[in-house]
Length: 79
Image (cartoon, rainbow, N blue to C red; front, side):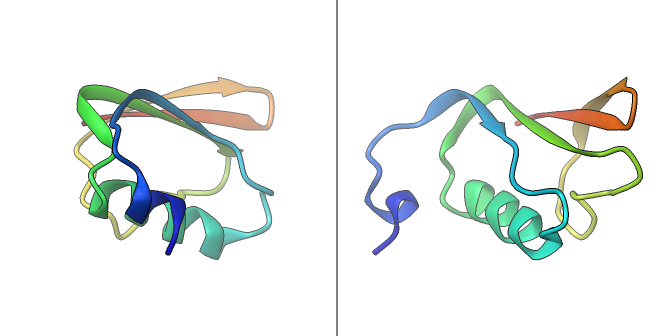
């Protein structure tokens, strides 16, 4: 049983910064965050990743903004 399955709370802000080279971890974790509905309505998910990667591809994400800092991109996703 994972933390996401056991959790009893939802969160206003989730910051996510896994190792940049683990693309499967990005997709799996982002999908799980939305599947288990742990981000509150109007909450923000902040994902740090390499600027050239589109870690949210294949996910149903409609509201997001990008902030670039050199090679680093912060993608802020709003639920």
